[in-house]
Length: 253
Image (cartoon, rainbow, N blue to C red; front, top):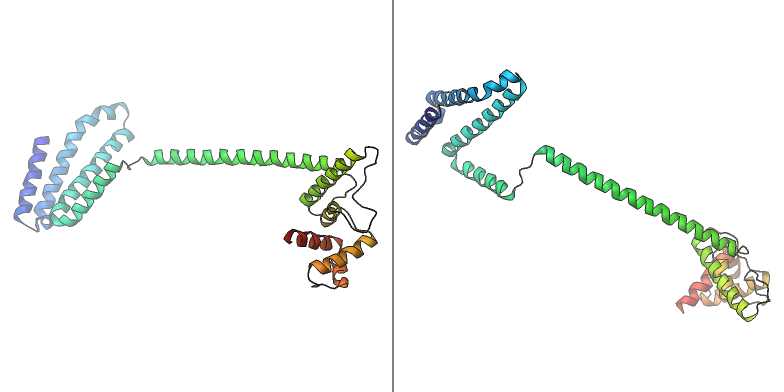
């Protein structure tokens, strides 16, 4: 059967060489049909035992795959004579794919993508756990600062309040080193000029100014901002805004 099929193929090739439009003739179709029948006949004995053991899908699938491969082979061979340029480009693409080893089974690609998705989900889960752990540590630290400096009330900006509490604790520690018997208190000095720690606490919303300190801060803010605001405008903005303006102006200087 193989020899007969090869003979028929050779005959078709030679006839195409003699006639440019041979693929359009009825004889070409008859030769193609005969080649297909010979190929099917050669596959029948090999698939017969499979049909006896498990009739149905396996043998039909194997035969269908072979027929499809043979059909593509026949079409490509016809294309070589009917349109050599397209056949050459198709051959180059096939060889390029084979050289790049990019012909993958779709099932393998799906498994590979599933593995990538699973790895991404694992990374996301690990990041979420790490973020939750950081949030727990942050809340514990802020709670400890609140317990250590209860004189400063909580404000809108938790970070600013925490920094103000740290500054207050540092100032109190320095005072405690020089005067251990002095009781700890909130950073509200008795004199008119507020300390940097008090300004930071006021800017964070954790403390307020008394009347004398507020009057001094209004004048200081007017000078540092180049008299851009009137006393009434500064008082309307509140103690926190005044303290922030003084701190920012001192940093810029």
